[in-house]
Image 1 (tube, rainbow, N blue to C red):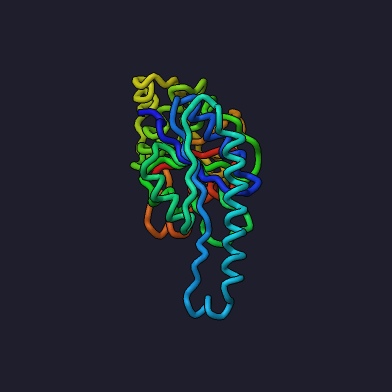
Image 2 (image 1 turned 60 degrees about the horizontal axis):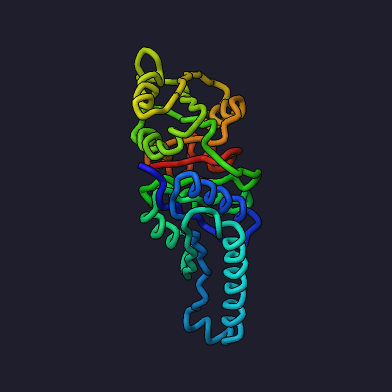
Length: 270
């Protein structure tokens, strides 16, 4: 497997350039095709509201959306053109999460931004991770990340989701200079927790080392970020939303913690 189709969400926000440059770097490394997707807000209003506000308000909304699309396109042209890989621009109107989910199902990897800390509603990362069926690379709302995948931390708990994440990340893991498999409070992982998955990865050309840690005063999510900082990781790979449906709904566990507090890009799979 390789990341031959890479989708990146592009808008006119300050953080769009960071994730676009990161997606472009991945497309160049993988000799892949980059799809930059901009989603315009919908300008149609219910008839009873449109009758009250008049056509001027709708036209003003349309101009705002057109300006945002133009700014996002200019960013795409500045970053992705003449980079040694094929790319395309898509400008679609609709609900951002729904449009992204649809287009992401035809990509090997989707790159999006982490929700801003002041956003009250669940962000796209939460929705896409559960709905797409493909790996989602979430880029933090703070920091610069010109490349990922040299020093990778893999969060391993032998779950279905973790297994999926490891195999989805293989194109990156094969290129990594260092892959560190971390198990936290391991149970039922064999005599040496993490050894079996490291052996499996070695057969795919991945040089991986394993570590098992216990933590009582820190959550698993906090421990992951702490150990990632210790090793200088530039990417975390983990399965998303293991456990009960209720746990997923309240964004609990390590997944929820990393979605809120990530310090490096995280590749999630579900």
